[in-house]
Length: 93
Image (cartoon, rainbow, N blue to C red; front, side, top):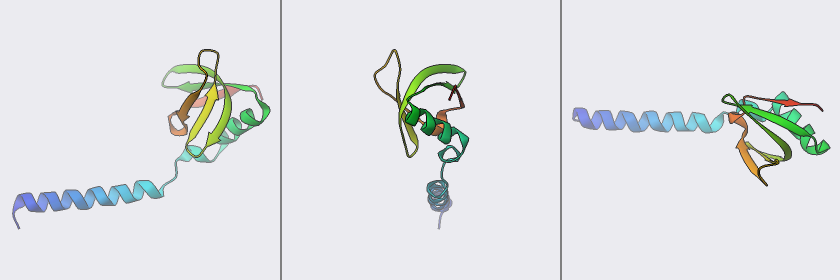
């Protein structure tokens, strides 16, 4: 087996191993206080302020599905955001 064939085989094995582990691990934001606060906002129809990457966006949560949160705000009719992209939220629940 040549050096190039060994390199390609090793790359494919490594890629397969990391892909399998990534699918098995659920995102940390799926459970815990962030998801609970978003669900409470959805049930109570109360607004939250979403913090991410130094920015803030106010919204009313309309649904929390799997790894996404759906909401609406003054500027947009519908907003869809991945839970793992949210750094934190502020809410008066």
